[in-house]
Image (cartoon, rainbow, N blue to C red; front, side, top):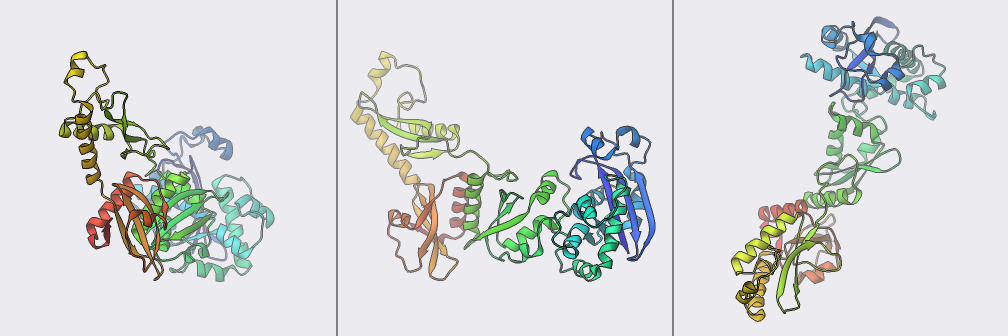
Length: 446
C-alpha cells in the first residue's frame, strides 16, 4: 500500500516552520482506497508570500485543528505504507518532525515521484510537479493546495505504473538502494563513483559553484551521511536542496584531508561552511633599528613584503607574547611599544646603551626561535613511490606536498622545492602538532 502525500507549510524547513494543510491518498497500486485532508493551524503566523502562493491565510486556519489533534490519525495512515510525494524528502521531513514532537516515530520507506518520473519519462525539460504534469497532460486542480497537488501526484503515480514503472519502484524501494535518501538533483552514480578513501569533497550548486567543503576518512560514507538523516534544521535542508553535483580530491591520510579542507574553506569561502571561517593571520612581531641605534620589537599588522618574527591571528595574542619577552629579558616597554607615552628625560638616562640593550633583544629573539621548531611530518603517500610531507617552519605551517619515496631529508629549503605553500592558521597548526604528538616516529626535526 502507498500513502501519496502533499503538504503546505509556513516556510522551507521543518525545524522552525509548521504545516498549514495536508492531504493523503492511500493507494493499493491500482486505485485510491482511502482519502484524508485537512487544514492545520500551524500556531504561528503564515507569511504573506506563502499566502500569495497557496491562498492559505491566518484567518482560514484559525479554527482548523492543530497538528497534535490529527497526529494519531495521520500516523495510523502512514506507518504501514510507502510514503510517496513529489520531492519526497521535503514532505517527509516536515511530517516526521511534527510526529516526533507528538511522540510518534515514523520510519516508513519513501518514494519520490520526481526521481521516478525521470526514470520513466526521461528527457523532459522539467520535473517540477506543474511542468511534469503539463508535459504528460495531467490536469491539476487547485495548484499549490495540498489536495490538488496530492491528487495530481496520484495521477502521475498511476501513469508511471501504467508505463512499466513497477520494476523501477521495486528497485528504488530496496534497502540497498540510495533512491530514498538522495537529494533531488543527485543521481545514485554520483555517490557510487566516490572513493572509500580519505579526502576532501565538494558540493556544487546548479551553477557549479562550490557551496560546501568537507573532509572525510571515507569520502563515500561521509557524503552519504549528509543525506541519510532527515535533519529538520534550516541549514541542512537548504544544503540538501542546493546540491546538484559532488566532486572530491583523494588524500593520502586524514591529516592531509584536514589541512586541505581548511585551506579550501579559506580559499573558496563556501556558503554552507560556518566553521573555520576565521580571518587569516593579521598581525606579526617585527624588529627594526631606530634612529638612535636601538633594536625595537613591535606588534603590527601583517605586511606582505616584510617577514615577521612570528605571526598572530589576534592582536592580543601578540601583545601577551611580547609582554612575556619584555619581562623575561628586561626589555623596555616603551621601546617595544607596549607603553606608547613619550619618554621623559629621566627615563632616557636609565635605558642601557644601544649595544647592551640590543644584546638583550637578540637573546629574546633567539629564545623565541628556539621555542618555534622547524620540522617535517613524513607519512605514506597515495602511491608507493611517494611520501606525503607537511612542513612546519619556525612554529608555523609552511606547506604540504608529495616527495619521491627515496629522497633524503636534509633541510627545509630543499623540501620547499617539492611542496605547495599554504596559509598558516591555528586549526591546521594545532592539527599537525596533535598528529606528531600521537605519531612521534613521523616527525623529522630539521
